[in-house]
Amino acid sequence: MRKILSVLFVCSVLFSCDRLVEPNIDSNNSSIKVENGRLVFSSTKHYLETTNSIFKMDQKSLDEWEKKYRINSIRQMFRSESAEKEAIITENKLMEFENAAEFMLATLNTKREIQIGDTIIWYNEGIKHYVPGKDENLLSRIKENTLFSTLKGEYSIGTLEERKPNKQGRIIMSATNGSLDARWQSGPFTMYKNGQPWGVRKFVHELYVTTQTMGCFPGGCNTQSTIYLRVKAEYRDSRGNWPNAGDARSVFINVSSIGPEYLSSGSLIAPYYAGNTFIYNSYVTTNNLVFGLAVGYGPTYSGYSPQWSVDVSGYIYQNFNGDLLSNAWNNEAYPLW
Image (cartoon, rainbow, N blue to C red; front, side):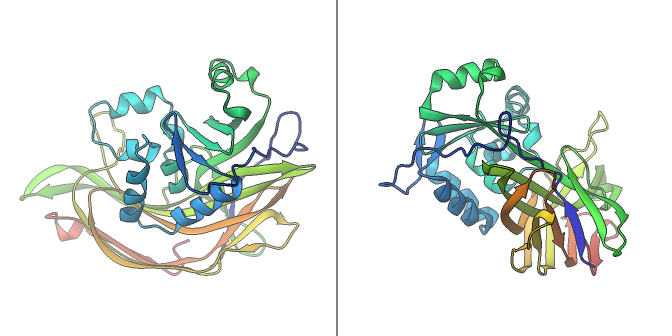
């Protein structure tokens, strides 16, 4: 069954959406540079081409891509096993990016910055602050007081939460910042290791969306939106929270996403057809597995909310290595979403 995923995105440039933010472009160099610990893209087109490439990478390929540039990316910090990890995440306010697209996690440094042309872009609490002319002093002032920021856009990060069906029988699913998607989970259950109880675990399968403006015009903004599938395992800590589990587990996935459509202004304009995606592989991992399902582009006009229309079917199998087979989970449905 095809489902409609509402991205709940509203365009915003300071005062209105009638100013197009375009950085000065270095047309002589299309390679990615690193300056002051942030990635530098020659143009918006170069940035979008790069994010498109990242979207198609598996986790191993993305690891190799990140190693080339040696920045402290948000993605690396989330995957770090450093003792200072939690302190750095808290200090730099990175938890808002927990559900961000992989391309955003890999391209933003832990200060939440990138640069396109001569314009530094600082991501902060749903707002993209544009700093022309590589003005580091202005960037510092904006970080101290955002009232100094005069050029802004928006980004939206959230998981998908199921809501009641509409008149056509499709399920309306909204993407809201910080919402949790608990539609597909197995547990809690007691995990066993070498025949002994080893704490409480659960498996979770979820979709999440990241949407951001890529320049505005009178009456709206151009938007880029991505939708991902995440396969993860969690454990219950002493405070009752559910962080990611680091135990080795086996995963087998056979999932198809057929004909996803990005409706950037609802039914106002024709949808962007993102193409089919087929995932068929097996893994032994201690990390979350993240798979890109679709990336879409289009104008979002004021007063309209962009949506994804998707149909994801198949099965996902998970089991902790050495655990009881009764704790294994084969999550199969046609459709899953």
